[in-house]
Image 1 (tube, protein in one colour):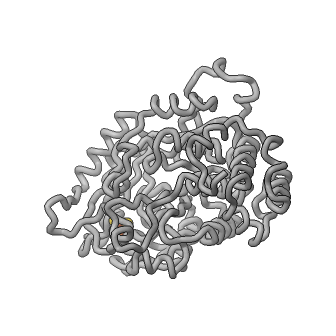
Image 2 (cartoon, protein in one colour):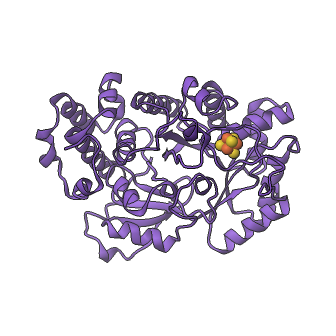
Length: 410
Ligand code: SF4
């Protein structure tokens, strides 16, 4: 089997059992995977064992995928969740200049836009009426943004739709807000919380290694700043997601170090709700055009990153999301067979990945998610942002008793 598995070779993945593959994988790799299957705790793997898993190929890679799928079943059961949400990128004007970004515009470009507070509130009301429970708000960083604009967005939305969950502002935007207001970070985050910020996206992480970050975006916040914003948010009672962007200039060792770092933060704060691997969409980006990145992840890398996350984060961050916007339908389903258990948001608008050339579309309806999930024999359920409430969406008599075992969410 070639190191990079073809889609046709992977079609058999859903029916592959551990007993089919375990004798074909290298003994050291088998013993690492058996250890985690036994303890259900990724902390039991050494750095070297983790690197070996991240570099697995051929049958070893299949073994990793099957083990991740088994761990997923043990840790979170057969339910696959999604959240009904609307993405609101309030402006595409940005001075940061990340080379992987095809979304940002200069202020004088013809298609630059900036939504008013009234427009943001109107969109939130519209989303609520269409059944959304969350708005996800991120945007570019325009120069001379009014000092308290992030706070004012929260106020405008909560005033219009008090029960809407606001998942907003990347750590980069938080650092910008601190710079604009001159407030200490914890005061700034507490102010946002008190004005309606419910959770924070753990985006702007990309790869948490300053050398790689320098290639991707010389002006972006540093690794230390990202960690500081996340830790402080957790301490202020604001939970966050965690992310990693793969398929550009990084190596498998970077994935491992980032997952271990996230584990370390989680054991200190318990503030992460989920981990979201984000595949780099290379078309239309300077990073690719300047020859600084590969052409996005291979099929094997997509599956490997989701499986590796399931294994290394087991017992720490137990919700692993598939970012369907960046994948096609079949590949997103295969990721659910390789350790993932969440489909993310329906995203009534999705601008950032589309501009970079992703083709999965702007919106997946709850019914589409339910069909995609049921098609692979799992149970669709709508969740809220923090996974504290889930509601199963199809009649249970369609499933076997084993499939309906209730998961325990971390
Ligand atoms: S990723 Fe965000 S911060 Fe970077 S250029 Fe794009 S909009 Fe600006």
